[in-house]
Length: 356
Image (cartoon, rainbow, N blue to C red; front, side):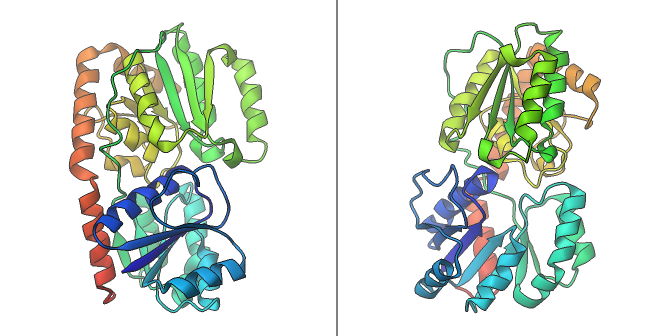
């Protein structure tokens, strides 16, 4: 078997997913290649499989004509489905829904996608995320669907003992855009600092993926809240280095805060939990796969700053609860998101199309 995975840019959760699943699938005998339409921060992550960067018809045609893929998985980009067919690809074409944004944005995109799915696509691949499963069932119930939980590297992402930072850390991972809801992170940090004056803020993001004008708005709000003296920004950190940072957050007595409005999966949250880093999150849908309130992490209602501060303080100050959540979170990730399960499910999907 030979499979090509495509996405816009090698960055963020999809780049992590592609790297992990290609490594896992290749161990099970499925040859994997990656195609990104644009360069990005993750293209030099040392992948042990062919990775192409190109977007012209000539570049894409050369790739598909010379490799004879049994299946191509197109992540998020509905218009690439038609392009691949027009460029001569006749094999199995699977549309994968990842990172479609807020529920209303996902609904709009899926509605637009209907004629492309009908004309060019063989099946849909989605993680077990409630709003995505519901929307695809409502809008295109005739499409063949495969639901496979995303893979998480539970071996690399583990707690690493190290010297703790001097101050407790409230960390955030995401993009400076509306769905990741960075404003709420700053608001919660501002309120939490009145209880924890030595609180330090760590933000991890990729500036190249910021929304238009968002960086300027972020700087303005940061100055208004007077948080600039406590903030450290980390940009384009290689994914394999993040366990060191998550472990430092743990050792500081701090936590990861996820303020997203909607998540298809939430890789940063999953990886933090693997490292036994306590997590406080909005109920952004995708994270329900691995957060159970007060068991493997904590939820707070979107926009409820008071409750967020209360829950964060409990995570930081209640040592017994903190220790229990850390252990149970790690145990759940190891049990439910290992590589073997993904490879088995993906192979079953291909076998259903008589690809053996």
